[in-house]
Length: 176
Image (cartoon, rainbow, N blue to C red):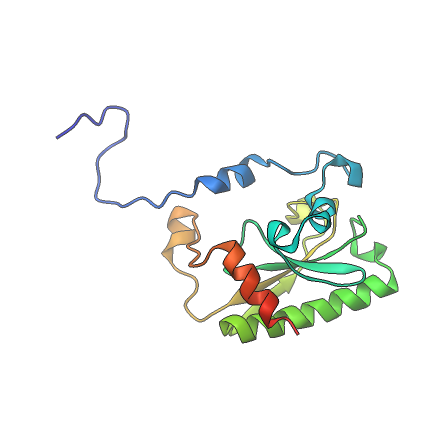
Protein backbone atom coordinates (compact mmCIF):
# COMPACT_ATOMS: atom_id res chain seq x y z
CA UNK A 1 0.00 0.00 0.00
CA UNK A 2 1.41 3.40 -0.92
CA UNK A 3 1.45 6.47 1.27
CA UNK A 4 -1.80 8.45 1.08
CA UNK A 5 -0.67 11.35 3.28
CA UNK A 6 -2.62 14.46 2.42
CA UNK A 7 -4.99 12.61 0.10
CA UNK A 8 -7.86 12.41 2.59
CA UNK A 9 -9.39 9.37 4.18
CA UNK A 10 -9.39 6.32 1.91
CA UNK A 11 -12.84 5.25 0.76
CA UNK A 12 -14.44 3.13 -1.94
CA UNK A 13 -15.69 6.01 -4.07
CA UNK A 14 -14.68 6.52 -7.65
CA UNK A 15 -13.96 10.10 -8.69
CA UNK A 16 -15.27 11.85 -11.80
CA UNK A 17 -13.01 14.84 -12.38
CA UNK A 18 -14.30 17.83 -14.34
CA UNK A 19 -11.41 20.30 -14.24
CA UNK A 20 -12.78 22.31 -17.19
CA UNK A 21 -15.57 23.55 -14.90
CA UNK A 22 -13.05 25.37 -12.69
CA UNK A 23 -13.05 28.26 -15.20
CA UNK A 24 -16.81 28.58 -14.68
CA UNK A 25 -16.54 28.34 -10.90
CA UNK A 26 -13.83 31.03 -10.82
CA UNK A 27 -15.83 33.25 -13.17
CA UNK A 28 -13.11 33.28 -15.82
CA UNK A 29 -14.17 34.97 -19.02
CA UNK A 30 -17.07 36.78 -17.37
CA UNK A 31 -17.45 40.40 -18.39
CA UNK A 32 -16.15 42.76 -15.71
CA UNK A 33 -18.64 45.53 -16.38
CA UNK A 34 -21.89 46.23 -18.14
CA UNK A 35 -20.75 47.18 -21.64
CA UNK A 36 -19.84 45.30 -24.80
CA UNK A 37 -16.26 46.53 -24.45
CA UNK A 38 -15.84 44.63 -21.16
CA UNK A 39 -15.06 41.26 -22.73
CA UNK A 40 -18.54 39.84 -23.12
CA UNK A 41 -18.34 36.32 -24.61
CA UNK A 42 -21.73 36.80 -26.28
CA UNK A 43 -20.22 39.69 -28.26
CA UNK A 44 -17.13 37.62 -29.16
CA UNK A 45 -18.90 34.41 -30.25
CA UNK A 46 -20.51 35.79 -33.45
CA UNK A 47 -17.03 36.75 -34.71
CA UNK A 48 -15.87 33.12 -34.44
CA UNK A 49 -16.51 30.25 -36.81
CA UNK A 50 -19.60 28.20 -35.96
CA UNK A 51 -17.39 25.32 -34.82
CA UNK A 52 -15.11 27.42 -32.61
CA UNK A 53 -17.98 29.45 -31.13
CA UNK A 54 -20.29 26.41 -30.79
CA UNK A 55 -22.89 28.32 -32.83
CA UNK A 56 -25.77 26.12 -33.96
CA UNK A 57 -27.61 28.69 -36.08
CA UNK A 58 -27.38 32.39 -37.01
CA UNK A 59 -30.30 34.66 -37.66
CA UNK A 60 -30.62 38.31 -38.61
CA UNK A 61 -30.63 39.65 -35.03
CA UNK A 62 -30.11 36.59 -32.77
CA UNK A 63 -28.07 33.40 -32.81
CA UNK A 64 -28.29 29.98 -31.12
CA UNK A 65 -25.22 28.71 -29.29
CA UNK A 66 -24.44 25.75 -27.07
CA UNK A 67 -23.84 26.56 -23.43
CA UNK A 68 -20.18 25.99 -22.62
CA UNK A 69 -21.21 24.80 -19.13
CA UNK A 70 -24.45 22.91 -19.88
CA UNK A 71 -27.02 21.60 -17.44
CA UNK A 72 -27.81 18.82 -19.93
CA UNK A 73 -26.49 17.73 -23.31
CA UNK A 74 -27.88 20.05 -25.96
CA UNK A 75 -28.34 23.02 -23.58
CA UNK A 76 -28.74 25.94 -26.00
CA UNK A 77 -28.92 29.66 -25.53
CA UNK A 78 -30.64 32.12 -27.85
CA UNK A 79 -28.69 35.38 -27.81
CA UNK A 80 -29.27 38.75 -29.50
CA UNK A 81 -26.24 40.07 -31.39
CA UNK A 82 -26.85 43.46 -29.83
CA UNK A 83 -25.44 43.85 -26.33
CA UNK A 84 -28.63 44.40 -24.34
CA UNK A 85 -29.01 43.49 -20.65
CA UNK A 86 -32.76 43.29 -20.16
CA UNK A 87 -35.84 41.85 -21.82
CA UNK A 88 -37.58 45.21 -21.98
CA UNK A 89 -34.62 46.52 -23.98
CA UNK A 90 -35.26 44.21 -26.95
CA UNK A 91 -36.78 45.75 -30.06
CA UNK A 92 -39.58 44.14 -32.05
CA UNK A 93 -37.33 42.29 -34.49
CA UNK A 94 -35.26 40.86 -31.63
CA UNK A 95 -38.35 39.76 -29.71
CA UNK A 96 -39.79 38.02 -32.76
CA UNK A 97 -36.61 36.24 -33.82
CA UNK A 98 -35.79 35.24 -30.23
CA UNK A 99 -39.20 33.57 -30.02
CA UNK A 100 -38.79 31.94 -33.45
CA UNK A 101 -35.31 30.63 -32.58
CA UNK A 102 -36.59 29.25 -29.28
CA UNK A 103 -39.28 27.34 -31.18
CA UNK A 104 -36.72 26.08 -33.71
CA UNK A 105 -34.37 25.04 -30.89
CA UNK A 106 -37.12 22.92 -29.32
CA UNK A 107 -37.82 21.28 -32.69
CA UNK A 108 -34.12 20.62 -33.38
CA UNK A 109 -33.56 19.13 -29.93
CA UNK A 110 -36.58 16.84 -30.29
CA UNK A 111 -35.40 15.74 -33.73
CA UNK A 112 -31.72 15.29 -32.83
CA UNK A 113 -31.98 13.85 -29.34
CA UNK A 114 -35.57 12.82 -28.65
CA UNK A 115 -35.91 15.35 -25.84
CA UNK A 116 -39.14 14.71 -23.92
CA UNK A 117 -39.46 18.11 -22.26
CA UNK A 118 -37.72 21.47 -21.87
CA UNK A 119 -36.82 24.16 -19.42
CA UNK A 120 -36.98 27.50 -21.27
CA UNK A 121 -36.24 30.81 -19.66
CA UNK A 122 -34.06 33.75 -18.73
CA UNK A 123 -32.34 34.88 -15.58
CA UNK A 124 -32.56 38.68 -15.73
CA UNK A 125 -29.96 40.29 -13.49
CA UNK A 126 -27.21 38.89 -11.33
CA UNK A 127 -29.48 38.50 -8.28
CA UNK A 128 -31.81 36.38 -10.43
CA UNK A 129 -28.97 33.98 -11.23
CA UNK A 130 -27.71 35.36 -14.54
CA UNK A 131 -24.13 34.22 -15.05
CA UNK A 132 -23.63 36.97 -17.61
CA UNK A 133 -26.16 39.60 -16.61
CA UNK A 134 -24.90 42.29 -19.00
CA UNK A 135 -26.06 40.43 -22.14
CA UNK A 136 -29.52 38.91 -22.23
CA UNK A 137 -29.77 35.26 -23.30
CA UNK A 138 -32.55 32.69 -23.20
CA UNK A 139 -31.82 29.12 -22.13
CA UNK A 140 -33.37 26.09 -23.83
CA UNK A 141 -32.53 23.00 -21.78
CA UNK A 142 -33.68 19.61 -23.07
CA UNK A 143 -35.00 17.12 -20.52
CA UNK A 144 -35.63 13.38 -20.49
CA UNK A 145 -37.38 11.12 -18.02
CA UNK A 146 -34.81 10.05 -15.44
CA UNK A 147 -32.20 12.64 -16.45
CA UNK A 148 -31.91 13.78 -12.86
CA UNK A 149 -29.87 11.47 -10.70
CA UNK A 150 -27.56 11.48 -7.71
CA UNK A 151 -24.58 13.08 -9.51
CA UNK A 152 -25.77 16.71 -9.43
CA UNK A 153 -27.17 16.32 -5.93
CA UNK A 154 -24.27 14.52 -4.28
CA UNK A 155 -21.29 15.46 -6.43
CA UNK A 156 -22.55 18.70 -8.02
CA UNK A 157 -21.45 17.18 -11.32
CA UNK A 158 -23.33 16.60 -14.56
CA UNK A 159 -22.39 13.63 -16.70
CA UNK A 160 -22.56 14.63 -20.37
CA UNK A 161 -22.35 11.75 -22.85
CA UNK A 162 -21.20 13.77 -25.86
CA UNK A 163 -18.52 16.35 -26.67
CA UNK A 164 -19.84 19.87 -27.26
CA UNK A 165 -18.50 20.00 -30.83
CA UNK A 166 -20.33 16.76 -31.67
CA UNK A 167 -23.52 18.07 -30.05
CA UNK A 168 -23.21 21.34 -32.01
CA UNK A 169 -22.89 19.45 -35.30
CA UNK A 170 -25.86 17.22 -34.52
CA UNK A 171 -28.10 20.17 -33.64
CA UNK A 172 -26.94 22.30 -36.57
CA UNK A 173 -27.88 19.42 -38.89
CA UNK A 174 -31.31 19.13 -37.22
CA UNK A 175 -32.01 22.90 -37.35
CA UNK A 176 -34.75 23.67 -39.91
